[in-house]
Length: 246
Image (cartoon, rainbow, N blue to C red):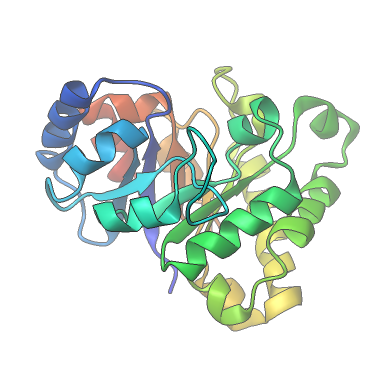
């Protein structure tokens, strides 16, 4: 079933003590009952944040093996043991800075689902692709390579997050109409592969400089089910306003 979701990605920000205080401040915000708030926090924070309140906690990364000689990586078993429910897979920074390709991300999706973690699967186009007008086919290929191996049942546990890379941390934001165009295309791709029921039930988030000042207009679009929010999720009051923008 489609859900309204306000997901925050703290990236490599806050100490553990700062993160705990931020969660406490977020818990004080008045959030509508039909909006699910998720915070994807640094791995060092997770044990301190899980169970602090009603906010769902997610990891920012996962490795595609349960255990082994993979120094610095995060096992799905570790996340599950901490009580984490969600995990980001394919964030643009993992793709761009750490060279995670579609094959790696497909494996990460499989491993998350194997352990009943809910992946937030991210994808989106860089500026040069947007400028040349091939953004829809570019994103379609990302879906085909990284996501479409899943069964319809597995897909039901995945949240999608469209991230126009050119609008992340740049202050640039896709217009509401640009966001809707891509989200509608993504939903149509899901329908073509898995059927209308699956397409109607999957939540598709927009991630790209979402702020309290633009969230309401973006979230009003029929195929946008919420946001994956970076910097603005580090401000409790501002993120609360975003969660109240549906």
